[in-house]
Structure formats: C-alpha cells, structure tokens
View 1: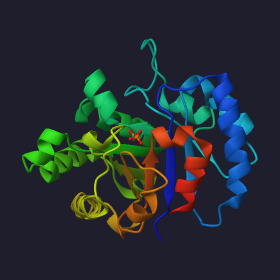
View 2: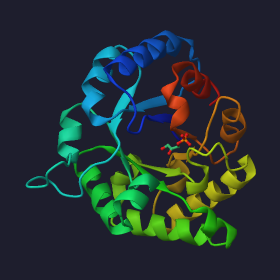
View 3: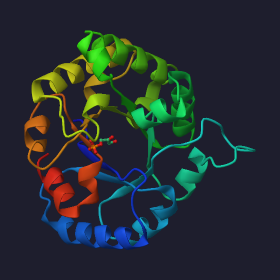
Length: 249
Ligand code: 13P
C-alpha cells in the first residue's frame, strides 16, 4: 500500500506570530482527521524549531524547502541534509520549480540533492512539472520524463522507499489554475510508468499533485487512482483550508 501524504510548503511566508496562529489552528483541527493521511509541514527553515515545538504532540512530520547538493563545508547560506536530519526533519523538498526558475537549479543539481537526502535518511519530495509553453507545445510528457530521469539517476534498492514525486505544473502554481483531475491523473500514470522503467517499485511510490490545490478541488484530484496526495502552497497558510484538504484524501 502506498502512503498517502499531504505536504504544506509555506514557501517564504510567515513570521513568529503566523507560526503561532497556524500551529494553533492545526492543533485544533488535526484530531478531526479520520483518515490515514501523513502530513509534512515545511516552513521556512528558521521557523522549523518553533513549528516542531508547537506541533510536538501531533502526527505531523517536518521538512525543509531545499537542501544543499554538498555534504558540508564552505557553502555560505546553505543547509545540509545532515543538518536537516539532525534537526528532526524527515522530509526535504528538492527541485521545486521556483528553485529551478529563480535560482537556476538543474536536474544535475537536483540529483545531487537527492543523493544527499538519501545519505541522511530524509524522504526527498522531488518536484517536476512543465511550463505552460511546454504544455501547449505538446511536450509536457517528454519534459517530465527528462526531469525524472535526470533527478533520480543513481537511486536504487531500498532508497526508493524514501522517494516521493510531486507533479507541479508550473502554470498551475499560485495562479488559481489547476490541472483538471483527468490531466493530472494522466501525468501521474505516465510518471509511474517512467519510475518503473527507472527500476523503482513504481506501485509503491507516493505521487503528489501540486498547483492551486484548494478545499474545493482537492477531493476530485485525490479521487484519481494515481494521485496519492498533495503538495500545498497558498492554501497551507490557512489552517482550516489545510485541514479540509487533508480530510479530502
Ligand atoms: P500553490 O498551492 O500556492 O499553487 O503552490 C503550489 C506549490 O508550489 C507547492 O509547492
């Protein structure tokens, strides 16, 4: 059985005050979840310890939004996988489209980050997805195939259990435009086939959809057979909305 997962990517939002109020809202709402959803809260790194403290008695896991491609050393501003693991994080987002677009992150860099995450026992949530131009030109499947192959080369054996793939079409992120459930399902099915070709136990790998997931569209997306959960941006900054999305799984 694949694990179901809903991950909250707070991106570069928040403050101590927001952490406090979001955590209180989550703590109040979590007991109402009756499904077996796993939850990962991924705040800005500076607030991870605060979030962990506030949500210590809950089922939530925690993660970082990015990790270094290197083990340790003179890399000013970077956070290593070892540090994330040492700080009680179980998850690391890698290859988010914002990092690819704004910080020039390549598949090669993402592959290094995946390797680092594997070395330190983190679950890597590997993000892939095409731009609007790529979708309109009919190359979405090829783009995602190339990203998956580039980012996951070198993963093998027991490491696959620590791989989650998030399909986030770039044109759906923060835009209010969601992929239709059918289009998202088609891409997830394609990704599962690609993972099998890469030697992964594809049926066991958790695949997330991300891009303008909201309480009113989550259930339809999550009902698709190859969509095992969501990677939530904007809606994760409202605890009621986030809990409602978790309930939809
Ligand atoms: P939104 O849910 O705000 O579209 O963001 C999705 C995302 O990028 C999550 O990583």
